[in-house]
Image 1: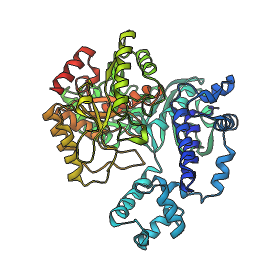
Image 2: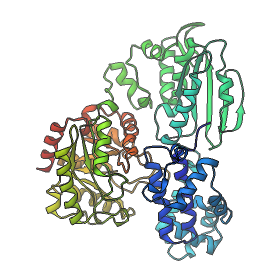
Image 3: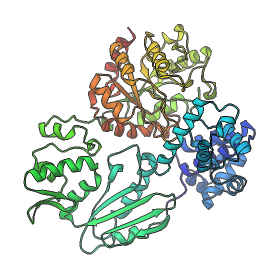
Image 4: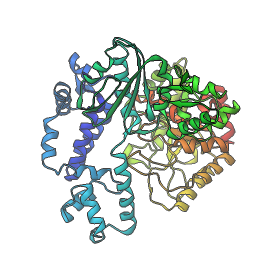
Length: 576
């Protein structure tokens, strides 16, 4: 049985914070739970291991005696009595309203008290009856945002982020690979294509005639319900609401089955039509000429049939990849091994959990040549943004560390807020001392498309502007992207040599795959960065790489595949 993970503990603490926030509880208490969630999620070791070893949890940042007791209770029992008591004080679906864009704790509390709105259904009914218009502070613009947000929430409620689904799928695959008679076990579906959210998990196994793979699958821990049970296909529902489907096939069909259930549907249909034109048939069991099977043991058999290049799963969306494969002109997609450094991370100077030296040493262990330390600037007070004095102190520390450390270089940077008027949240005297800037929109998300676009373009006109971080500001399932003309922003970036970030945080993955492909076609360079707030977060780079591959990005499109000397040369060019 899988142990209690840091993710589960963090989720519990965040839920407590949400419920306390709705109650109007002491904001410092609410913040303590959110900070504890961040500490737990970012810690490089599992809390379960620390509890087992008798480790003093109060030595962790933001974890006092009471929170340490709660962590221990969660690890030992899988639940927290305090959270269950809080839940009993609230309607079961009230917390779900917090996930609707435009509804923070104060507004949820107001709707609950004035209109007795306790669920998405209640909210939709109140919208239909135009009751929200009578609530103080709920103007037409906010109401429209809430209406759009409900539709997004309905869609996302039945989907799981890539970072939630993939570890579970990998855990199951590792179990099934060890079962008697298993030859191959692979992840399929949209998860294999590394879509940012997935509805369920699809697995395909090639097995010998005598095998116990399905038996092990149906007896996995954490199963809530067996939906369908068979010798070649079974479906289970896990306790977290995730549906998992396993298909068991003979080795001769494995490639065809894996390809079929990887999709996408549009990609598969296009290939099937091509096969029909050749007098053949492709299905989940193989490649057929009449009643004779002529291939299907390997996925490559399907592409070889048409004399095509093999198409990587991330590209199988019928967005032109088939034509390029026929011409043998597919891009060579960027890989994690080609990344030489990380250009966006936070330390204890702002809202990070580790020191500059700790982040540098961890990056070195990951094989990087360089990092950029990009703590928040003064305007973002909620993240302990640095004033000019603290920035200068940090720059001095970086100079000292660069003298001491071997095999890793720390670049001087900051995550500089783009203010509403397009100016940057730091004086030129500081900006000139930096090797690069990572510039971000953190406020005024509701500006009109014209104003938001003009704001970002004006910021790019500053000669110290280097990278536009998380360019659309979205949080998957939590916050819609702000309204901005990305084509215009990319045009300005291209003209001025600026870089756009692909933020690898699984809650962001911003740029999305469509915008990555647009940037590539327009010749705009990309930085894939983790936005790490802890040592563990530095390992999130793989999620950014997968998003980049979905956007057809190659090594040459990504600036942090450059060597340190080549990157410094590029940065000097941009700054000029």
